Length: 96
Ligand SMILES: [Zn+2]
Image 1 (tube, rainbow, N blue to C red):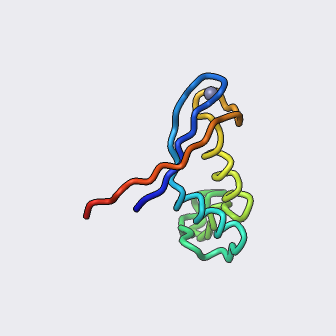
Image 2 (image 1 turned 90 degrees about the vertical axis):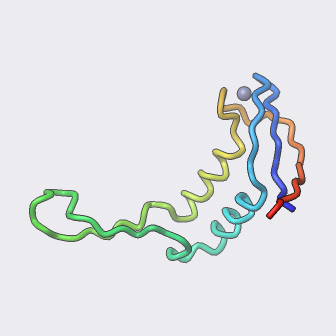
Image 3 (image 1 turned 90 degrees about the horizontal axis):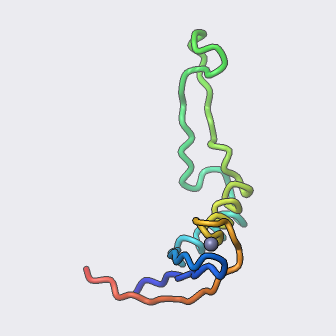
């Protein structure tokens, strides 16, 4: 059983969906952010000069704030940016 939110924007009537499990994961990640929960810390060449051969480890600037922003994005109308929406929870059988 998969649960997802079906959100309908009051302003422009755009309908979009957001997986409940995804939002739950983000919420969990935002409160227990350790910096290694599925982060793609990527090693790449120094981005400052591109020539020195130095390695920069980027942790993806996705700490608690990043997670919160992601959650915020999921709760924002993708069409007009409104936070004014009607929400339903849909349940779907997953056939596997
Ligand atoms: Zn809208």
